[in-house]
Image 1 (cartoon, rainbow, N blue to C red):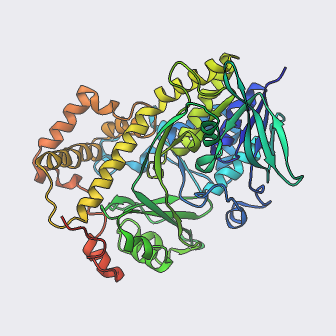
Image 2 (cartoon, rainbow, N blue to C red; image 1 turned 90 degrees about the horizontal axis):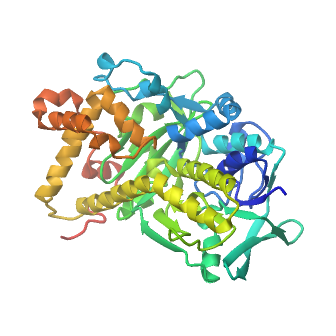
Image 3 (cartoon, rainbow, N blue to C red; image 1 turned 135 degrees about the horizontal axis):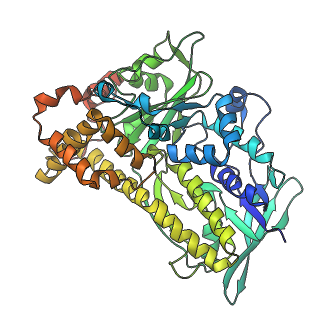
Length: 496
């Protein structure tokens, strides 16, 4: 008998689940609360698609190499369709600095480091249309999952299906497996905890808020040439990044630490947003009036947390017949761009588990073991980086703060050693990118003796001999930026 799988949510996690499971022949029903995308091109879809269930739909997105390789390897036709729709692949060569280029020798593995980027609406639209063409996949829109149908059995709590509200009023849908890809707003896990499932989680604030605006290049205008000033950077009180999109579009995301209340209030004004970008050398050429125009309001996103949920203690499943995936299982700071990749990797791990065994308890235990083995190192690294960023943001707002000797040494090792080595040696850049793109453990490259020795040599080299490897300051200091924006630099300062 064909196993019936109910997937809650047709966002990235739900679509990745369908991509993973469709070739296995299972009967897949995706239940999506929001309307289907409007018929039309990517521009129309960006303007009109109502997605209340995806608060970050119009924020910047990119698929890291791990996810891009999954799509290209498992679904080459989908990869081709994404490119035809205007999605971009940014290769290794775009990451090279002027110091790299004389030393650079192309290697076959360089193709692994391509990033797939476009507006999120375009990515989701193309993947959804591709998924819907599978005869064993059905996407049911405007169908809200109200609750899980659960039964207490001697072997534990089991999910039998879901109760939904739709155009017909309401009904129950029974499935052999329920995969909850409902995102951070899904209540499925909370319902199971209330029913007695021993599910645990750890959660903490990422300490930052996101603000994104979209732009379109003017007719006949090409993207600005790559300059020494980076289109990504961290000023302490502000992080920024530029994301090339599809069909002549791009987006800029500015990230503000939680304590910077006055900046957070001002930045939602498109005029202020553009004024900030105009003072960042890596962004200013992109938003020049002769190059592009803003085509959206400023989209804000808060309530950003790191969260890891455990539905198994390693030996005993907390529930049977239910799997959480995507942001419903693991949430991370979007700054690192790994949310979609986490969802895809989890979906394919789940596929392997469902194919390998029919035992409901073994399935959940094995799934969580694999997820922890594959994704926990990246999660821990990102969480630790968030904690460090939160500390730096508070230190910058604390009058009279003086860093400790240990923090100064760590800062020097990273800025004068690691960063300089990566910016100077194309082989070290390759090594570091393998961790960034989730192709190996995030810190594996630096633990290799040869790589560490190279980094240490750069670190002990006098500053004047490596001066060309230092990037220009990515933007003005806090006082200068605040004064230019008409915000008091004393705003939100903390007494030591």
